[in-house]
Length: 333
Ligand SMILES: NC(=O)c1ccc[n+]([C@@H]2O[C@H](COP(=O)([O-])OP(=O)(O)OC[C@H]3O[C@@H](n4cnc5c(N)ncnc54)[C@H](OP(=O)(O)O)[C@@H]3O)[C@@H](O)[C@H]2O)c1
Image (cartoon, rainbow, N blue to C red; front, side, top):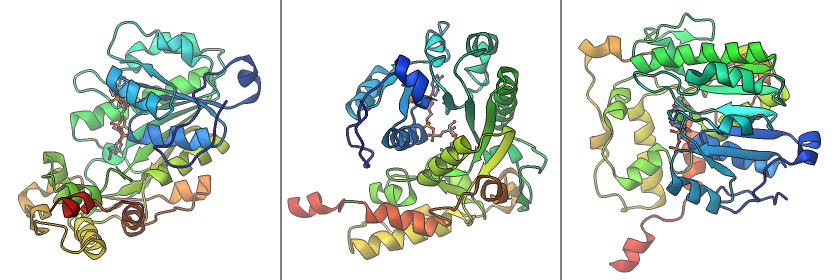
């Protein structure tokens, strides 16, 4: 039985589909219970879906089970894919596993087996989480789903091939299949506010993005509502850009997050915001992948109204839900 709750950390009921579920309830299998996968699984659990998913390590499986999720241990790079038989019992599959350098989509390596196993199964809907990186550098132009893709990095090229592979599989199986090209994902626990509070140095790819004038983002709650809208309105081979209305530089977003933290907990931050600033380098402009990604199709065809049309409301909602991170150090001093 599924118990309802709202916070992500709250316990939920574990369930696997039995015969009566298969006749009466929607069943989602999330391949890759990462950041998005967990939020989405929680959303659906709250709506009385049967939800299961996968992760690659035993320690994470235990953590997820403690949160109440139903989880299978699964690594697509392994030879044996026992999980495939399990997939047959689900009506919906979300693929959240990224491609692997030098390999490609690790699931699609087993494409023929996937096809033969899922043919004639209960599957109705297949969603693949992709990235706006497939467009490459567009010189700052507005980019919709019909804009020619021109991936520059190996991973973006593999991503594009994976999109095609999943859409083809969906078509062969005669099920609704769609690709979601996501902008930079943020949400509770993974945001500019969290980075500033942890005061951790930026990673190399974050610094790269820091030099861009435009970076498209999307709050995880909006990803979840788009996925749910797509389930309600299945398509055949549709591709959707999933971004907010406000492409902005990383520097701008960090300055905003910095002010939010300073305003809420004055004096808590030790460093100045300058470490987040990344110098512009005009010579490298062509490798920055500049583009402004349009979300018009998502709104028009899926009827989505963004909860967080800009990073501003997204970050505000994140900080509003946070406990004072400086509380313990204040008490200790
Ligand atoms: N982060 C972004 O800003 C961004 C932007 C655009 C698109 N995307 C893509 O959107 C998708 C969802 O993003 P996310 O941030 O939720 O990703 P995430 O947190 O990194 O989750 C990825 C999931 O895939 C699983 N996985 C990775 N390699 C695997 C393999 N070989 N076999 C089986 N499972 C494997 C991971 O397992 P474990 O749980 O065991 O680690 C994890 O559950 C990903 O494909 C991501 O690349 C991300």
